[in-house]
Amino acid sequence: MLRFLYLFVYALGSLLLFACESRSVRQPETAAVITVTDDLGRKIKIPKFPQRVMALAPSETEMLYAVADENTIVGRTQNCDYPAQVIKKPIVNNYPMDYEQLVLLKPDLVFTVEGMTSAEEAAKIQELHIPVYYQKFEKVTDVLRGLTDMGRLLQRQEQAKTVVDSLQKALNRLQVRAATKLKPNVLAITWRDPIFVYGQNTIFTDKLHYINAENAVREILPQPYPALTREYILKLNPDIIIGGSFGKMDTSFFKIYPELKQVKAYRNKKIFAATDNLMARPGPRVVASIQELKEFIW
Amino acid sequence: MSRNVLYIFFALLLVLLLLGLGLRIGSFTSDFSTVASALLAYTPENPAHFAIVELRLPRLLLALVVGASLAFSGYLMQALVNNALADPYILGTASGASLGASLSIAGFISTTWAGIYLPPFFALAGAFSVTALVILLGYRQGQIIPSQLLLAGIAIGSLLTAMVSLFTFLSGSESAIKSIMFWSMGDFGRANWNLLPYPIIALGLALSLFLFLQKELNILYLGAERAGTLGVQVVRTRWLVLLTVAVVTGFSVALAGSVGFVGLIIPHVTRSLLGLTHKLNLVLCALLGGGFLVACDILSRFLYPPAGLPIGIITSFFGVPFFVYLLLKKSYRFN
Image 1: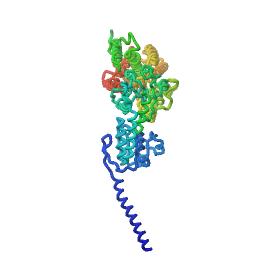
Image 2 (image 1 turned 60 degrees about the horizontal axis):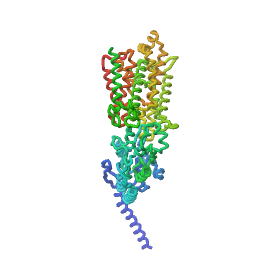
Image 3 (image 1 turned 60 degrees about the vertical axis):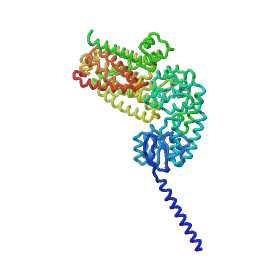
């Protein structure tokens, strides 16, 4: 009996010791802080093992769902609607920024993209001891690199690698071989009055390169989404217009600007409606977006 | 030829030169001979000809007629309320137009119906209804009280500006915000031949009417009582001014948005050149207003190609320093 009592005390002691030991080993790891540099060149301190993460941009939320453990994602913005399960997450308004809700959710790392969160907002969030990591996407490969970076920061390298490899394979598969020298000019319209379009310095231009097409806006204008005059568009004379179905554009856009019916895209009825979220979000669905463009163009 | 007629001649020449220059500027390369051949032997198949006749000319004419309309309306309003700070927008016309357009652009009401693009129509409806409301508030015991009209205009204008800000804030996209901004600060990008006749006819009729009533308008500067004793039908003249300003300004802001400062500064420039009550004041005012906006439009497209900056930014940048100079000039007095 006494032997059993000794054994019991020994087992209990070992268990306690093990528990203490594992705490003493894990605690410094979870509490450890590392310094990283984001895509804007900002040096920020983040936990080595982030446990509560969220994004302040829909594209970044999509990336988190592709890479992170879903249980570690603590919230979303009012515009995040993909993948479907994101809807269940609590909302943090990003315009105007709801700092209080952000503090309530206590993320230990927040991802965002340039243009979505201002430097002033980021500074204020950092004052609340929540690190803000900016990503920047100018090319399709930047998205793949962004996913890899995210995996590294979240200690999810394997998951990120699987996603990136699969995207890279899909990208290689859909690349149009330059069998023909003909490269159609594509104009993507985002707003009709004034006419705002995807400029040369947007990821849209790079997406088109994969499918042997060109952004009709060749000139690099100061704004990524510049306003164009009708005359400028007439001169561009795009082969394809992305901005709405032919029927819809014919009864709306071309009613306001009948002069533009002269462009090749209208004459050949090469006018298409792209899925808004695919075009606008440089996330893990970037290849799906290129695929959609390919279907319109070829 | 008197000095005053020379001013008119030079203003006309300036407008023509600016129009000629404006017709040259665009995405398609075109020299003066291309402009001349486009105007005299138009070939629609030639892209440069098409751009000059179908796009550049209506745009420049819209800038001209809007500038002329706002300057003319500003002149009338300053005479009506006998106040140097009055402009065509004190009746709330511009705020009403911006409200109508922004409601539609922000997606709170439809933007198209049966293929018709609705924001200009909502802008026109907003301009007329808000102007009517302000006039109603400025109306007491059978007549218009200018000071009350002024206060009502300021109050309603502030309220509507707040509402436009609210709709801008609530609008879903960055493009919608920019679109409302273009509307609120003026833009000639939508100009086309179909819509041009309305502001031109409105301005033509109004200008003809007040060329006959110029004398009565001048006597209004003396105040209602003295004008009455001098035989002016004050109530009738005031109503005519209000209705004219409402219609002429309404068409302008519906088609080009609320371009600022033209209606305030050009009447002062005119009076500083010809004097307070010259019979050619209205004509010169319209010419200078038109020329000023054509110049601002050319400048905006030159500074920020291809679509240009919202025109109100340019008018303020160049108009305000000139206005300050005019205020400091000792020889100029409003009354």
